Figure (tube, one colour):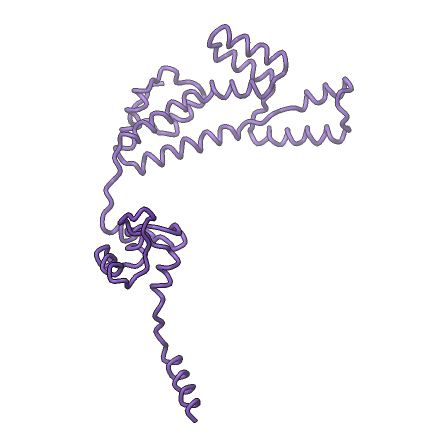
Length: 261
């Protein structure tokens, strides 16, 4: 595959998932990703998400086909199924085939791995042993490793570009629109910075309040000077003075007048 800057990402993903881009190395993929996203971290995140989604869709396009193995076991008396249960399995797999999915069997996986080529003698020996022992899970894992090798290289290139791409500086509007932290998200005990966030007072004002005994605070047991605050005490201090509503004021006055009679 000749990878050009203008090659659509969808084409690159499809080619890699088909295992048709062995000649692409890390440098090719990094250059492609850089040109595709142009230093935009949001674009990089979107590309990474598209690749992850493509991998999940690829996995979903296969299913484990066990019907013929079950039939053989049934014939040999190893499987205590009814004909109805075998029919149900057949129609279930037939439905997936009609959806365009590919059934995976031990033989299919063995042949697919063989087409990729064995890495070395030990790899070949392990694959052949798994095939003889009908070890579906082992063969599927090895087949996935080989099938996804190309797309994993693209993921690695995206991660590499993300690591060297600085985040965009936040402006005042972004800071203003940032969701406020909820009170329950603060720890039970915190320092002056968190206290300033909760109360809205500056740190200098908080220091004045605590030095004058107007605000509850704590200090470490080793006589340290660091100020600490308990969340419940700060909330209680903030809400200590209750402002009466007009209705409450009138009601209280009526009660006082009635008590004088």
